[in-house]
Image (cartoon, rainbow, N blue to C red; front, side, top):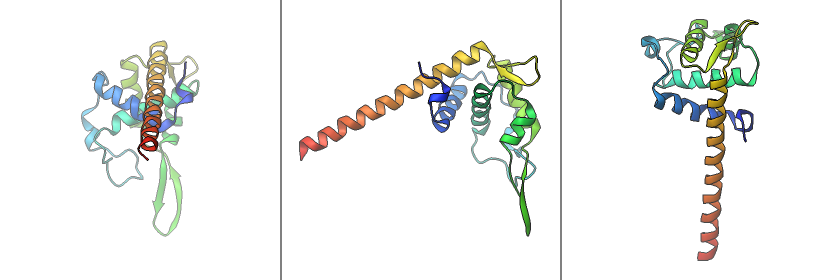
Length: 158
């Protein structure tokens, strides 16, 4: 059975974000349309569903590692702080955004607090993420088989 490690990050995050949005269980704060995701940003994200995408990325990151704290997530989602004519440096993302995403994922049972500090994937979350990864792999196989069928039809036409 394929797991999250067997699927490309982009495909899995998009699939899990759409799953979270469709389920409607993830509690989205009211401020998501106006908040910046880091002090080095100038604007809020353009994508209205950015909260679901970030939640999926956080869930995947915690799935791949054991115990992950908020500080590690802020470093992961940080970016380049452009400082004018001085050299750019890395800046951490907003820890409040990361904390609220982890709290939302805890409420729906995907994450749980770890004894060692930080957060980890719960058993329900593990099953959920593996199920989504399996669906992504099956969808990719179907796309490949459809492309092979189309190629065979084009060769028959010639």
